[in-house]
Structure formats: C-alpha cells, structure tokens
Length: 139
Image 1 (cartoon, rainbow, N blue to C red):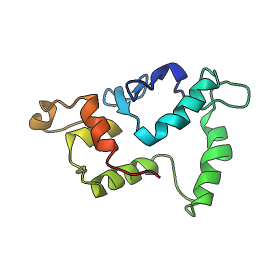
Image 2 (tube, rainbow, N blue to C red):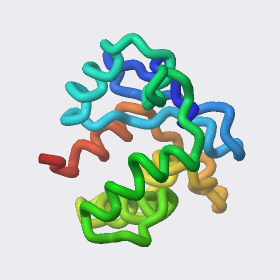
Image 3 (tube, helix red, strand yellow):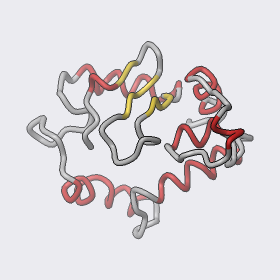
C-alpha cells in the first residue's frame, strides 16, 4: 500500500520494494509482461501512490481490505483469503510453471531469505526473474 509510482520502472519491468520489515523484503520484483499495460495506465493517472485512496493519498490496511481485497476474495469464491495467502498462491503457481519453490529466483521474488550457503552465493539478476515470471500465462 506504500508503493509509490516512482518505485515502478516500466522500461526495466521492475518494481523496487523498500522500507519493509526485513532485509530480504528490500528487493526488485519483476513485472509480468502482461501487467505492463495496466501499470502504464495507473502511472498515467499521475498519483503519488500506485494504489491511492479516493483523494490520491496512501490507503490504510483496513480501507484496502474493505474496499478492494475483501470484495475481490468474495468475487473469486475465497471469502477467507488474506493478502499474505496470495504469496502462497503465487509460489504454487510458479512451481506449477516449472519454477521450483526451492529456486533462488522464486525466493528472491517473494522476499524469502536463503538459508543455505549455496543459495546465498547463487546470484540471480532481474532478467532471470523476469524470464521466470513470464512462464506464467496471465490471460
């Protein structure tokens, strides 16, 4: 909800996450190629926040859940869905697309810290993460 439009780099297809609760959460997240037109439209609105409230300010969690997330979860038939549960769904979808839930790429996308020394020394760049996320067909 604190994501600002300036955190989105459409040209490089990356969102910069920062100021979150853990070091692993401070990262670059790839943008799926099919989401680019939607993000371009959001950015064209000229607001400070990517998902602003009605007056362009930052949504608080309670309002976001009431006006967006809860209606969305009702619409898809999962009324008890939580925002955190969407991370689990994303990991499962990517695993189904051949990106292992144990892969360094996926762990970096979702902000999980890597516990083994091998994974710590395995470097994955944003291009590799973009290639991985594009394996999923959105539409």
